Each structure stands twice: as C-alpha cells, then as structure tokens.
Image (cartoon, rainbow, N blue to C red):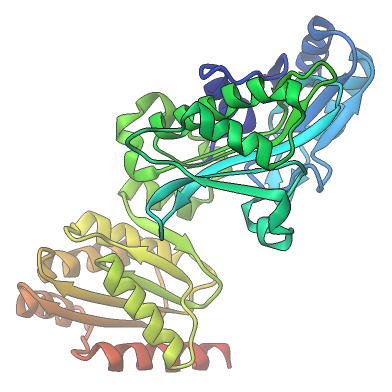
Length: 380
C-alpha cells in the first residue's frame, strides 16, 4: 500500500525527521488560506500516487497566496499520469544549498534492510543503476541491532557530506530506519532531502510503501488507504485478501500458491503467451476468494482467456468450483476458460463444473498450452 506524500510526512515527523511547514487542501480557497498562514513563497504538490510527478508537472511554485489559489485552480480536477488530482499539499519553499537522496528498502537476496544514500537526485531506486557507483553509498542494516550512529556517520562521509550537516544526517537516517522498521514498510525514501545553508536537513520529498501483509498490525496506517486512487480491480483484490499484480499480457491467471503461480506464468511464456496478471489465491482459498479472483479477470478488458490452475492440498477443489460458478453468476462473459483442477475433493469439484458445462484439463502443461492457443486466436 502506498501512502500519499502528506501522509508519509506525518509519519516521518514522529521520528525526528524535519519536514517543511505545510497542510493539505482540496479546494483553491483552502490552498490560499494555508498559504496565508505559512507566508512567503509556496510549493504546491499534486497528491496522486504516481511516480515522478515533479517531472510531469505535478509540482508548482507560487510567490503569493493569491497566486497559490490561481495555481491550485489549474491543478485540482485535472489528471496527472492518468490519476485525478483531488488534493494539493501546500508547503513553505525551502532555501536550497545541497540535495541528498536517502532510502531504505529490503534486499531479498541479502535478507536485510538496505540503506542507500547519494548526494544527487537519482529519481528512484530503479534509476540507481544508471549512476556511477562512486556517488551512491550502500549499507546493509543488521535487523537485530538497527542502524548505529557510526554506520550513519560513515554513510555521510562516503557521499561527501559537508561536516556541519553530518550530525543532522545521522538523526534523519536513524529516524528513517525506525519509521521503516516500526511501520513494516517495503520502501521509505527522502527525495530530495534538502541541506539548508546553515547545515539543517529538511525532508522536502517523501515516499513510503507499506507491506500489505503486515497492515493488520498497523490499523492507523491501513485506514489511510486511498481507495479513490485504486482501480476497481485493485480494490477487489485488496478486499478479498488476494496477492495481485497487473502485468502486460492477455491470459488472466487464477492459481493457489505463489510458487505454482510463478510456474504457471513460466509455462505460459514457454508456450509463447503472456500472463495478464500474477494472482495468488493463497494456500487456503475459499469459494469467496475464488469468486473474487475470477471476477477480477472477467472485468479486466485486457484479459482474453482465463487460466485457472489449482492444486488442492489445503485448498479444496469443490470450494474452488463453487467459487468459479458464483463468479460466473455475477457477470455475463464470453471469455474462454481453461481449468486445471487436481487434489483434495477433485472429483466433487469437477462434477460441479461439469453440471454447468465446464470441463477440466488434468495436465498443467496442456492447460497452459491451450490457454496460449486460445489467446492467440482471440487476438487474431
């Protein structure tokens, strides 16, 4: 789950990370009132959950409250990278001396949090590989010890930070790690972290991605989820507790278990097709979850064929069959379906489907191959 910048800054401020004075508004008049309270030059930021909004025109500067109101009228109600701008973050303009990039994410190979710092804007973690490794410092954090003072100081020296800003950098870096760990985040990012002429650090840009599977531990963060920023498909997947990721292909998947889901996608690719999504029902899929998963595929205009690949170990095949039939009752569709159903209560599940004219394929390879052939026929 992604937080808006204003929500992220509210979290960071509780961890001794300095942020600019600012508030969020949803009307031009509200923007003007905030600008009058702040005084001086104002930065207006569109609050939409898209990357690189600054490059897309989502960040504007206004010299006066009247100008801020006029700028807000042009921003609110427009679309930025396909997302409707409904809120604007209004902040004081910070005098810039230098910029620092600072982020923490999980390195799944090392199985540790990875702290990354640079003395220039590298846009995002994805853009890091395009930069010279000499200007990007990396440090793995021991999850048992956390980020220690000397480790943060070493990072500051590694990126050539000026001496009068090192103490502030240590405070911010440690605060960022505590926010990361205590929120069960997948990514926290300060971009840019501004260094003022007097050596103070201010988090001008902030980003936070949370682990959906850990949200039950953080109800105060879960309730900040912005459903208006999500598509119907994303909302359905979240509410059903499904692991879902949109992809670029046209074969919609329904699989129980992440490993089997990856193997299914590999087979689709092997036979010349492309998956439209990664959709894991989980190891204990219920009829309600199966219904939601199939419904997600049926309402996705990109999906031309649905491939259901179920190995019933803890999941019961008859539960899956009931879920499929319930989903088909929700919507009218002509999409072809390829179903592979094997395991616990397999015969009962196949009998339920057969009564409605649906047949199953026993071989996983054959099911993937048939789905690819049907998808190619739909495109042609």
